[in-house]
Structure formats: structure tokens, C-alpha cells
Amino acid sequence: MRDNAQHYKAVISGRRSREAGEFWENVIDATCEYYSRIGIAEIQKTPEPMKPIRPLGNGKFIAHYEKRAQPDYKGTCAGGRSIVFEAKHTDADRLLQSVVSSEQEKRLNKHEKLGADCFVLVSFGFKEFFKVPWAVFRSMKEIYGRKYIKPEDLREYQIRYTGGVLKFLD
Image 1 (cartoon, rainbow, N blue to C red):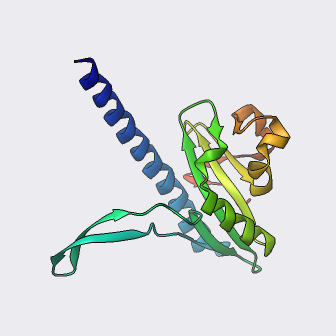
Image 2: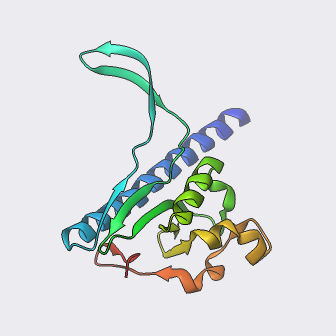
């Protein structure tokens, strides 16, 4: 009985996390559409790579998502500056550095080296939002003495969410 309860708790927790992640991406997507509409930036979500497993016919297939290898969003701001960023949400009081995969880290480092504005957009419980420069996120152990960040660490990177727009380019 106890094993079943733990299983269902894990299933519910996983579902809740997926739904929160989708909501967070919808907030960012709506913001990207707003920035495009007013001519500030053109930003797209990087499609998640899928591997087809079995064809079903008529262009349909069964597939699974492969491990994400690229940052979540890429784009160009007015004036020509590239931006590349990861989007992370947590309902916890801290965000682990390990939420960014080593492959994503490599790509963010490469884009940053080429002059792109690279960062991690972070939501803590959909209440506090931060645009954390990639150099800070990458170096959190040296900066904060640990491999996680808390909202109180990030006050200087806090951004507003007003009128349905996450102000990460203001």
C-alpha cells in the first residue's frame, strides 16, 4: 500500500512540474510575441528534438523526446545583438545549477564567447522573476559558495511581470 501511495505522489508531482513548466514557457512565448509585435526582438523557442520510434502511417508516428541539447530560446534584438537563454521554473526555495545540462552549458558558453547576451530566466513560484546573466549562473559556486541560488541571492537581477509581459529586455 505504501509503495502505491509513493508512486501516485511521484506521478502527481511530475504532472504538476510539467504543467508549471508549460505555463512558464507560455508566459515567455507571449512575451516574445509582444517583443516581436513592437519591433524590439525576434525570439523563438528551440524545438525539442524528437526521435520517431514507430510509424503509424499518414505522416503520423510514435516518438519520444530526446535529451535536450540546446538552450530553450534564441533570437535577435533590434540593433543586431543575439540573445540565447534557458528558462527555468521552480516551486522550491532554491534552483540547482544542475538544471542546465552540460550540453546546454557548452552551447551557452559558445554563444556568449561570440558576443550573444546569454542568461537564464528564472521563476520562483510564479511570484518572483529573474534574468540571471549566464556568467553568474555558471559561476554560482564561486559567487555564492554553493551550486544553487535563492531569490535573495538574485535581487539585482529581478525583473517585473506586468500586463502579461515578462520585462526581460527592458
